[in-house]
Image (cartoon, rainbow, N blue to C red; front, side):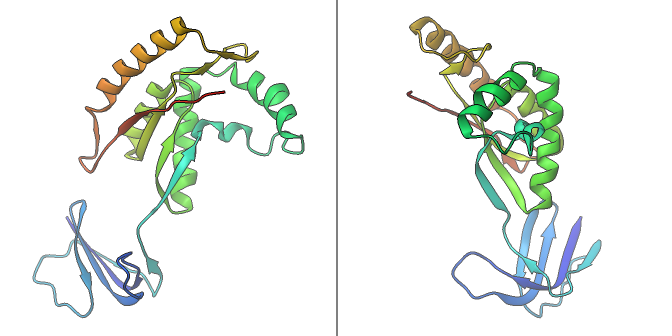
Length: 196
């Protein structure tokens, strides 16, 4: 399918000034960006941008997408009170299914503000991965070998926990690195090391 975006201000991110022109997408790839071209290709859809700006999507490089359920809740508290007395207890009740649905909600919010990819870390990242895959949202999945206790009383740092988490992380890494979203983008997994 060929889609032509006409009458757009275009920012290419290559150091050029913004210019007025057209952008042709063939399937899921940009085939042409420029001015005043007569297209020989069959155009399936023409979108008139009415002078609006076309540019690459934003990338959010630090997200906990599923935390959307905490937005504006007790946000008048100091950070430590919010984390330990409100946030952590609420998170302790989350399930994999909650993460799946909350991730989808977060993706819709991201897209509405021009964010087309995120680097995410949170709980139940397998559910996040599934939501990302189903919605075609580009994600870099960050897994943490250091994990917060489920009762949120502190951090577990024992060698036993570290080893078991690292093994689980490696298994998920192998699994996630094999899936692709809409044949456009491959999800990546990063093992994030935190020291407290």
